[in-house]
Image (tube, rainbow, N blue to C red):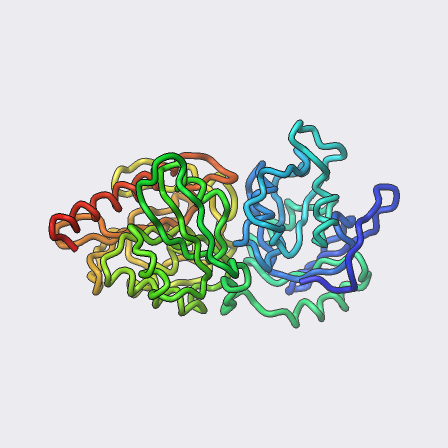
Length: 394
């Protein structure tokens, strides 16, 4: 959300001062970075040391002001290849030290120039360590960043007028308006319908690498829209907002599960899978955001370093199977920092896998590639279900 007219880029010779005011009144001062103007959102921190371009263009960050914990940002500039969507989605960007000159052969412009060009208000020269510690202790909260307002009290008044993230339904705001297809690379093996709740471009790319033709549908798609494409599997993407405020996709997913169609969900898709299975969700104090989060697969006991961006989590019992109308649900992954549920599985009475989800981002953009096997698991699941169907199965 931007105000104060059309933001304009700041020059290096005369960078205005800026202020950041949290909803509890804590104020930080710094310099304008990117567009000049004013913005509001939920203050969150991301612990990645790199990959800021992928972070900023991730639709999951809609209406969030992202604080980078890495002290030096912008050293690789901005290129034309690494965007994860058609635009920057963050409401604002707060950093400590901005790189003066980008040093990557792929860079086409500076980070500050791209923020300014897209009208994204940010701040530099901020004590991001103190700000992060404050958010860890007090939790993610509403915030305002302004390079046109000098009075913290006046900005605080506007901050307190902003809606909270709890209860926000944002998937429709970031979803595609028109369905589109990402073709398989090489021989087509399977067809997947992906519901775009804030999908990153790397996700259908990972599927295409495995011979999957992906039909990406808007978040408002119905089960009839899904079934009309006769998919081998259904995928729900990452996305922003409160899963408790999202109803339509949950109903679609329940019909998908009732029809016996294999399902794979990530991030927001994990939370909606939990809701479809009858579990609740809750807001984390400050969430998980970064590309260095340790997660354990409870089946293999393997630890993966994973990419995260979520402020909500599924409330499901660890180590205790739950009977649902669609099969037996279990928690498959947990976060090793705080034991948060990081994955779910649905199996039939014989123990065969029906559907699964994870809370993190296996497409690895940006991030480690420890979890890329999950796309292979999806391929294997669809193949197994297809074979069962031919044998008289579903």
